[in-house]
Amino acid sequence: MNIEIQNLTFSYPTGVQALRGLSLTINSGGQVAIVGQNGAGKTTLVKHFNGLLQPTSGSVKIGDWDTREHSVAKMARRVGYVFQNPDEQLFSKNVGVEVAFGPKNLGMSAQQAEGQVKDALAMTELSDKTETNPYDLSATWRKMVALASVIAMDTDIVIFDEPTTGQDAANIARIANVIKVLRERGKTVITITHDIDFCAENFERVIAMSQGRILLDGNANDVLGQEDILATTYVDPPQLTRLGKRLGLQKTVRNEEEFLAGLNK
Image (tube, rainbow, N blue to C red; front, side, top):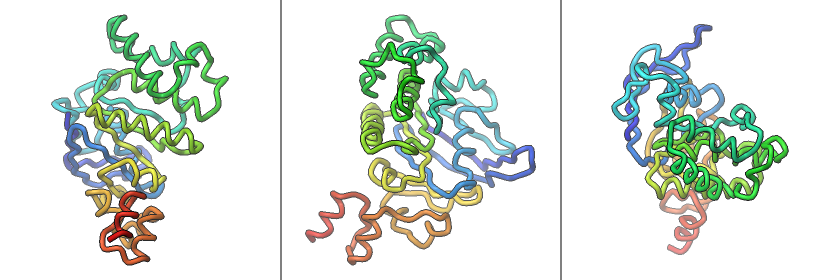
């Protein structure tokens, strides 16, 4: 299902205007990374997708649902949200119960819920940790539990808020694989990230925000190649993109495969 945003503005009770007239469409199955400095409005924007925040003016539609007309609980059937800090999500006595909570809360049959839980645990490499208390796990594995608890709900849209923060290389690779599988299944995947290399390697569309507005929106290569504009958001292009430009490669590159192909031309 598509995400349709029309002239969205949002101000916090303090009077701070966080979003300033955004219009945006994310098509079903899209893979989108949202980048920008702290305070750019990234998290404020995506919290409108599941109804955690409501527009001051304008509208947000998830499929044929206007978020103002549905509760957060109902929006959870369409939009899964993995918070930056997994400890804000985890509350159950063991991993298995934690991951099963969402499917059961959505009213799935016992058989369907069991299948979703098994699949999510396998995807996140947690199948051998079902009896473990999440807080007996390292922070990296608690992150995977948070991912699994959202994946098990089988929502059409999955949002990752800063998925790689505080993660080691092995867990970043696991997270990238989860995104790959979700993409293959036709899910819409949206991430907020400061990890520009992770963004470049895993997402085809990049939106750069600053001061509640969209500065750039398009193909990842096109956006990440606009170094001067990105600099205004305090975002540097990926290392390989910068190196490719310094070497005079004809096309903007964003990963090893593109870089090597550019060198061989």
